[in-house]
Length: 69
Image (tube, rainbow, N blue to C red; front, side, top):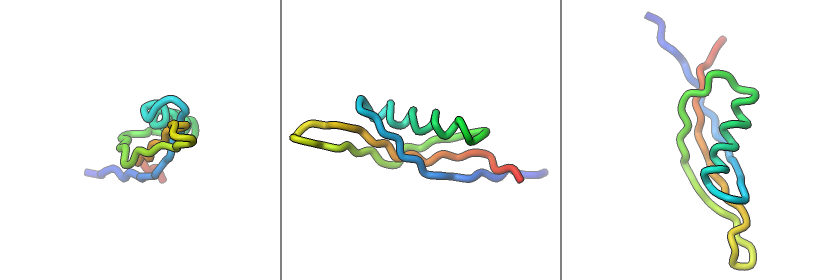
């Protein structure tokens, strides 16, 4: 029985509104050029602050997709 092989890459998505939008945007953008996305794991969340206000959100996401020769 043959198994499957998956590649894992790291993406960073950004958003002016939320971490959820940042993560979703990263996945949607990757999905435009990568096929068969499988699992996404958020590994880090952070934000940019200017003048004591949050100006943007960032989500670091590990994504796996099926590796095809």
